[in-house]
Image (tube, rainbow, N blue to C red; front, side):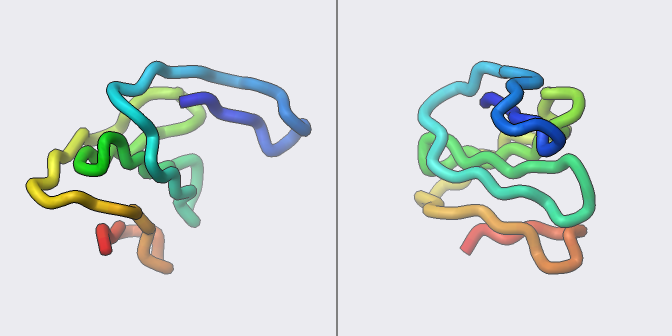
Length: 79
């Protein structure tokens, strides 16, 4: 996972290796949180400023194609 700063165009601010292939990335509306979906079944919540996982990975028994935050930013859904 590589994070680019929104203050500068294409300035790399952090990297973190992921286990598996990144399939989806979703930015949270309430701050520096991202959801990552790897291998189609593992979802993790990341703090971008710290470049570290906050929670997860949560392994889903069925394949997941996308991960999204709810509009409130307090929940996320796996449609």
